Image 1: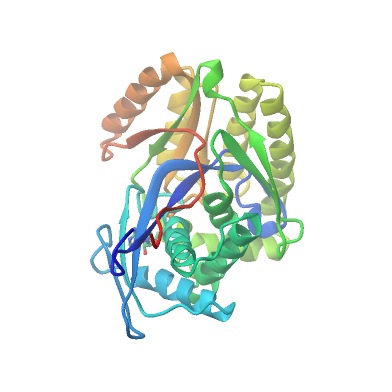
Image 2 (image 1 turned 90 degrees about the vertical axis):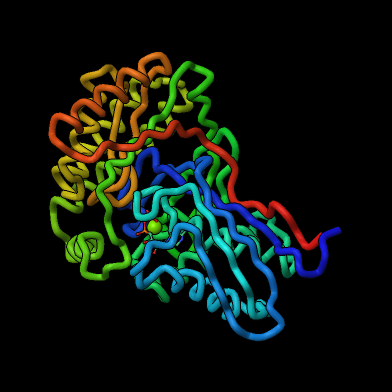
Length: 341
Ligand code: ADP
Ligand code: MG
């Protein structure tokens, strides 16, 4: 048994979105999966009502980062949890602001650790409750207008599965696991971090602007959402049929729509996609909100090295800081790693 002062430790994953981008806040469909890169929170009651948070990855001068934690505590208290004063220590293997949902991972790691501390069971309903509390922490407290995909992926992800989410009723999104046996057929998913950083918490940023434009009926933005929802449905069918070339083509079409109709790509993302396809990938697209962040490439395992090298060479030719690559596969959602003993 742990000593009374031993922390409760929880892990929550980042995610990539396979397809279905900028649809979560527009009543649409998306298909993310939880990945191995993750944030870990160690949480210990203090004996007073103060909150102290440290993060190994916190960027000096980042004015927002502790607000994500403050927001999670506020939301859990709002739904009636008796959360005591806490010491919280965070470590993460995720890039911050890289489009792999480090913000949701931080929120969900903290919330999951607190659930462990308070003995709240993490069944399906409990996981949904936490996902919603974490989404509200980000939108209401930090002021980042996100749609809820990231928190659901972090809380409901499962090994070997993507998560189909339907936001038709935004207050009660419907989720379904989709078996995604891509590795069995000799394919890998390569995430390439462009190293271009976006700031979602900036309320005047491009993300918030796109939301407003869509809400006002901007025709090109609307066309992206309509065609993207159809692509998500087709992607679920393609995965079911193990039609990987078709899945790849849908990913590439999604990228073109995000680049041309939603206008959230940047030259580095377009370069990774174009170079990957030229080097033999089945499909590629930006993943996450855009304006930087990561691209996702579906490629035969034995071509992945060629794609990486081609992308690195294209970057070097343009004098851009080298990208970072990660192989990702669908992994489990948030979990308590060490409980109260
Ligand atoms: P993404 O979620 O795609 O990484 P966001 O802009 O939504 O991008 O969130 C990134 C922000 O979240 C960071 O700028 C920082 O404020 C906060 N953040 C996320 N993870 C951590 C962490 N481990 N430590 C400190 N701050 C973090
Ligand atoms: Mg985020």
